Image (cartoon, rainbow, N blue to C red; front, side, top):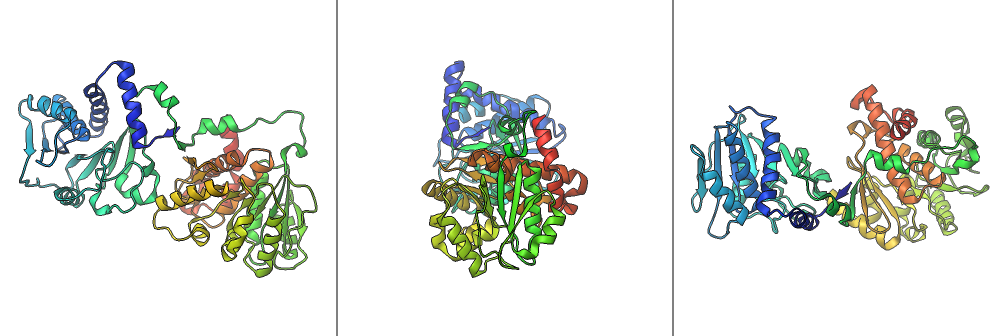
Length: 505
């Protein structure tokens, strides 16, 4: 599914108006009807609603919602329209104001100068229609005081399309005290990119997307750089296995992982790679890992480093389809030297995770040796060690897009909404997973899945996108059994096969 920017959505709306021969007021009525229906499905007519409408089309939506609620017997409605001298009502807002004022018994206040805010408490529902996605600059003046007043009121807040003060894409530098903290956001047709960043979660609350029947042809033809990964898309990418096949048809993976005291990471990655379908998995690690790997993952081959406790050489003694580096390797100088030699002699994509990333961070010149189209899977701290400090997920994504494009890499940004950035800067937002996956070893499992898919011949881009999705779906299945508190990384591994089976059904 495509995720569009504010300007792209506006063009789709304009195409809808032209194609269907309707005007902006008709589309506003369609949106307001969807919002009003959702509100009526949640609250009875006895509820008190306080509606704040701004001077633009978002305010027009809110006024239309007030009218529709009133027409359906919701009588405890108070409406405040801010028509201050420094602004001008949009045509849609003015038209819906006039239609609302035609109703009898409507409690309507048009704020022109002085404003005395109504008393609000936890039993009230506030409908925020102050400013929509068309906002061009952060809120200022009296609107900041109003937003803060609403946020502090303890009322249940419903935002129409987008919380006032929040931009649809980038919000760096915006004072979050001046953004509505909605309990429920009723988004029209699409979620916005900003909805997927952790720093905005408290402003979005629950998000319900309302279909307002924008033109499908316009949506399908519109270009975007942001995509939401869904089940059917991964299903279409996964190849069904032929009846006549052997293990050699499904790739050979060399997994360089583990050191003394951190062999669990190698075990988890290897088991995940096997469960994700790799034909052959070889684990290269220090000799101390032999007994543990052979007993924990008997399906995997073992390649012993010449050192007992750390990796000092990444010897390519066989022809492998791909190589994954990092889980539990440590950052010893001899290990860094081994990674240095490997990368300088590697010209095919590989998967780089965990301590391999930390090794590169400690010797930044190694970054330039990473083969193009390689997949990097840093968690937030690893990303910061290599690429510098960031304060928000938005800033991290911007930096990742720049790096992925300039160095032709694929970067996996782990988060609640994990994002995969490809070599062209396109962003693929994952839709699976849960809070229980925030557990030690979960990232090692992801490395195993992604590298397994890459070894099987999937492109680096699809390996990352599919791997993240399968990882999250396996986590969802594990959560059903163990709950978010009790889940451990091994539970995710145990559900990888089931996850792939259910996706392909």
